Length: 135
Image (cartoon, rainbow, N blue to C red; front, top):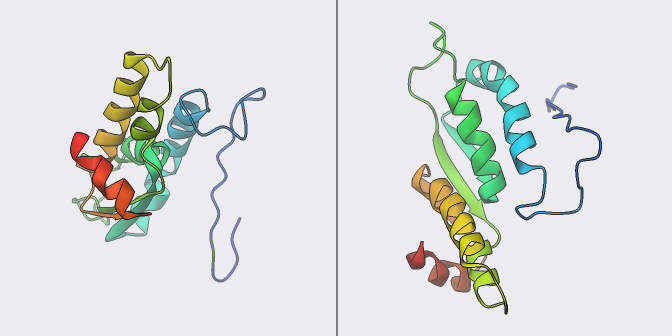
């Protein structure tokens, strides 16, 4: 959908995908896979910066970059990434009782991956900033 000021690219998720859930059980992988179909449209904008929100957005952006087309009209270098981090999942669940170490490691891996691809990071609080050295 498009108007004069905004273009919206909908990502359809499979029916039955869990909603209102932002953790490992969310449809983050399906979202990332489906978002990749917009790689060519994103590349044609020739953006200099992409904004990524939380590790879910990081996973989607990585899929888009993997599909980034090599069009003559498109800059060869992908845009820098500004990572908006609203929460550090691995830090939050690490303090819960009976938390599986593999689950903590899974979140750390996904959060670390989003941080590593970023040029800049904007976090919600000093507390989140303090949690990052562990990643």
